[in-house]
Amino acid sequence: MPTSANKVETAWSALLAGAAETRQEHLAPSPLFILRQTLFCVLAAYLFCGAGMVWNDWIDRDIDANVARTKNRPLASGKVTTAQAFVWMALQVIASCAVLHVMLDGKDV
Image 1 (cartoon, rainbow, N blue to C red):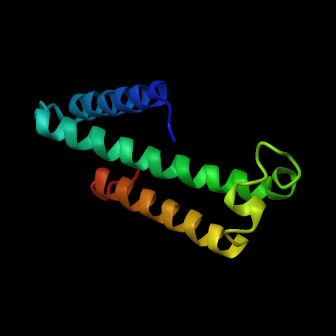
Image 2 (cartoon, rainbow, N blue to C red; image 1 turned 45 degrees about the horizontal axis):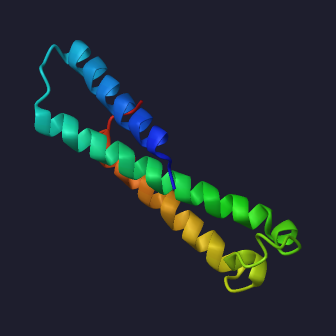
């Protein structure tokens, strides 16, 4: 999960992106637009972060199985298969990309 500092950085980045868009279009964004973009950005970051954590647990599963502190993690303990973890990771990446697509309104960046 993103830390509080990461959430603030994500929200700040979304606000800066909105300001940059305003300068290009010479329009003043509405507060609702800024809030919407910020929420989309935070959601996308949260999903990408979750996918990254699954990837990390997948790569470290053999090491985690031999460490007392991490041996009960789902992949290390065998509660979740590598195929299940991969599907969950892929779903999070796809969902995050979909959120970004909606956020960017189909524009190429």
